[in-house]
Length: 133
Image (cartoon, rainbow, N blue to C red; front, side, top):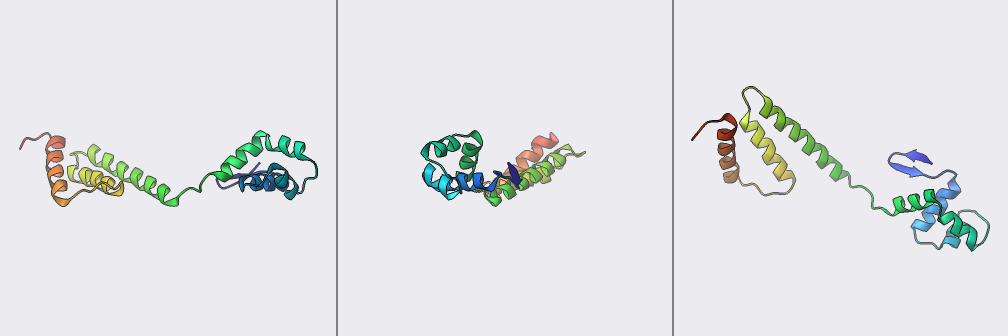
């Protein structure tokens, strides 16, 4: 198998063509013949039962990855890094940590109003800095 990014294509090309035809819904025999093989239903069935063919067909049937999901994951990781850095600073940077947390909540779709944010910042600042109201 040859790799092409995250997708693993079968070598030789006739195996890839067979797997693609199966993934698109062709019968085993139709896929076998359209890929350039000559033979009968039994030969097509044997080829379709191979582990590498089954894996490739399953991969081709999977929906493509959403690039937006990858971006969101990277952003959340970066924000979490900034939040941890703010908490580990000497003295702890409560405002920065809370703003990072609120930004994560907004990215994940949790509605955070300004009033709720201000109350959360005050509460967290008191907890992080160890002060009392």
